Length: 259
Image (tube, rainbow, N blue to C red):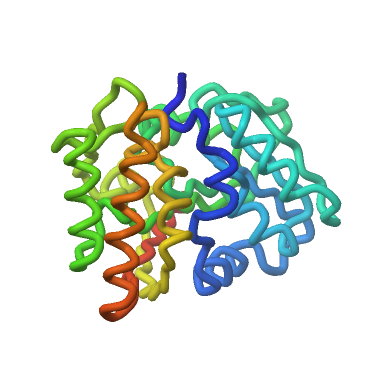
């Protein structure tokens, strides 16, 4: 069972998208090239490929969760770009020998991967001037506002103090900055960009978002899920009335290229 069993439909509907500034930054890395191949690892429901579809000539979507991959397929269907779906992990993805990606993206998923293995394997499947982009922006678990603190405390009342990572699993934090990890790879010419993002949530979108995560998916609550949702909705409605559900996030983009 993966960390995201049962979450795919919630993920597709409620996960925040990719900031337009990040999309523009990535598009610049392939601008002017006749052939523009995107390899998106740990793709989830395909948010990055969807955002970049108009900038690429071909896209490979790699996602080990079949439900997530199915949602990605729906999102990309009918777009004027060649898109191939691969139901496998980033560590095990094996393209044809002649395959060379021009841009590799990993968004909100690098912490689940064996990072050194993935970066090493990318050496053989990327163009000489390829860019590897690792992106992310934390979550409502890590956000620090009055309403997110109260929400996290409520989750902890039901699931315990430690952050969950799916049924029967605890979240293992990765404390090393991604720029340091990438700098030690073949893509050691690193630059980092931070994009400020303000999001306005509603009670409905927060509940949907929680059910898309590995730390507050519905199965974790068992028979208490309805009770949790009732209390969470009341808490969120109260904070909405008191000033709204505003989140200030920092979306980080770490770019690596061969030196």
